[in-house]
Length: 117
Image (tube, rainbow, N blue to C red; front, top):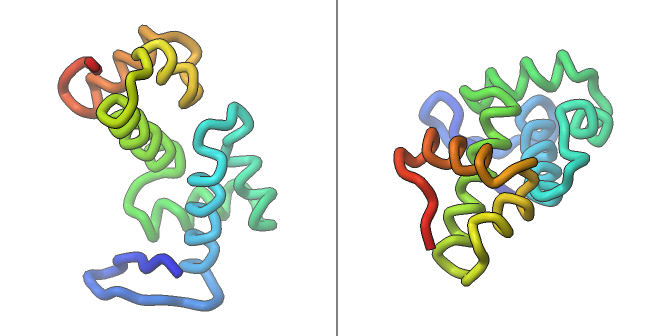
């Protein structure tokens, strides 16, 4: 089971908000490249409202659901750039960006540099 850092203490929780966030993170990772990945679908997956999931996710993680998804997509893109010979265009499409230009701008915003092979 994944451990989350909360208030500078590692805690594993079997039930409750932390478990909800862990399940949501697992859902995000399993669906990171899916165009269907959304707060609504994640909330449906863990059987809570979008408002509650959005709130508890932000409180526990310190970032919003969308920020977390974007961060994970950027980390995946960085790994793909390093570990594969895929083009920037292919990687942008694989991780769900509508255009390579938008992906490049998001990548530069996150890493401070444009993606290169």
